[in-house]
Image (cartoon, rainbow, N blue to C red; front, side, top):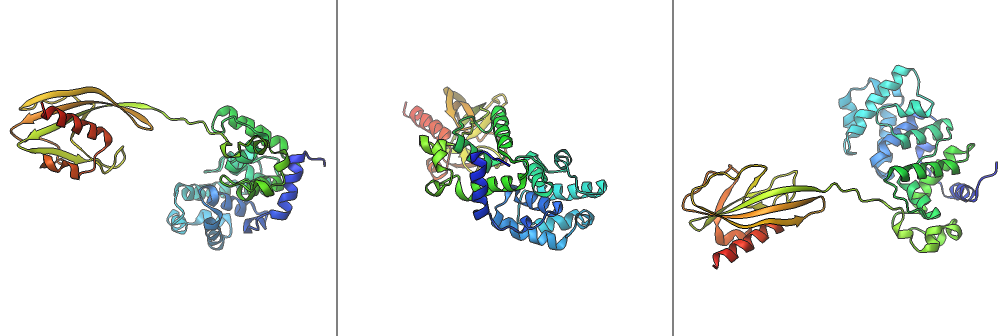
Length: 338
């Protein structure tokens, strides 16, 4: 079989540098599938012990399928991303219902929690299916070697890299090629400080030739920018003001702010309400904030939500506030001088 230069060099490198991993000592699809699920969001050093633990407790897919979900989750404890454990358990039951482990790419892909990459890895390693894997390691190796600047997180980019990886895959050695790509990206062509000086592909690597190894692969920034409209009311009442701490699950968690009204009408207050500034624009990574600043001067405490506290105006500097609130406080200070 004649291979292209890239594939030839890669397979020779793999012969000398392959990682000795226990799930590579078998063609049992169950053991290979288990390793791939565990390693989806986990480093090999951590996942190894969990793989051995699962193989010892559930040496067959039937035993895993028969287990309770609680037992599977207990064994998984510490690995995080617990949906993987639940999917693993469900997929084991799927396999038992089918009577055997599926041996086609489409069949493997239908298992709960299995995507294209995992299906290609299991199919090629366990059954010799000529399906190329494409993951972060593969994107990086191919983008650098061929000098591809097409973003890897676009539809066109994913299609391009999949086709390229597939075209390089030797039909008679899909398992070796896919594992070689994984290991080469993990050991040689690493995200930071790749070992370019000792790389067997250095002479023909486009990124090395052009000096842009550190900028490949390219990832397109896809941020959904939302605009939020905030109304801040600084309350001045007999030398005191009201603030509350922002909660979890939103911007500025744990910081303090004056009365905030969002997506609602400004209620009627006793006292004098003055607009200090409108349309204050504040840009964050994922959103644009448009704020209106008001000052409420009153002689009695207005009714506020329970999480607001009253403090001396002079002590507000003791509390951590967002930059936008700093701008409000500056406006309040300026207005007080007039």
